[in-house]
Length: 173
Length: 105
Image (tube, rainbow over all chains, first blue to last red; front, side):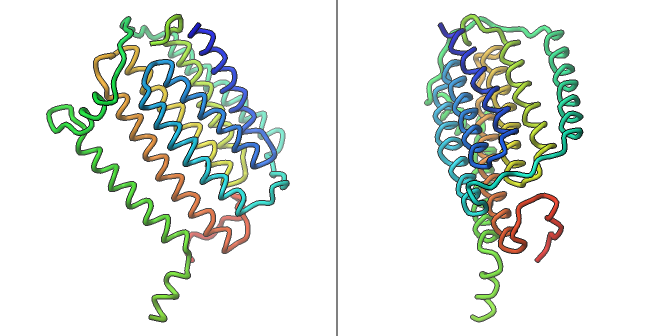
């Protein structure tokens, strides 16, 4: 059963990803990306990391997609068609990507991964304790650093998004 | 782990997604489309961390934490990129990569 769910998710994700990088309409491309992100959340659900799936759905599907759609609507007309690369460039890039994919797959399939049979589930409490522990192997420092990074990025986004209006106001005052 | 699915199949899926992202990153001419391709790349790599964690080291949680950090960095990066794109659109009325010639204002 889970096998079929995985294959369906995989097909949906690959088709949506190809459509997302090749669609000529901007908004459609963003919506195809949304399908890929939801498919990845589905994979997180399948391997029983519910917390990650929830984070993926809220941050990516809820936050990032909305941001990108906002910027598309602010910047483009909905019907505007994108300028695409020339056909020889596309074919060359596609071939290079196929070669790279082949090298990746050969490397992956020739390596012997030591897979451990397990069907454990991880609770959200375990993840939270690990993130906040300051013992060896705890993740309290990266956790704090990432919170400062997010704050700095948000302030920077506000300053950059406001443009030169902010500096002009300063001069008046 | 997913019953009936080996680690190789999942790696195949994420590799395909990763190279679709690279293809889009190179062929697209629009800043927002490039941003979309970067999201594909980041997601494919985040799934790999989680899969290796679950299949090979089920007692540890490091892969989950790295995945959470990747998601957080991706959120910060998208917010900054959208701010830069909108500011650029105000100044040069275009978001095509070839029109983007100025860095300072």
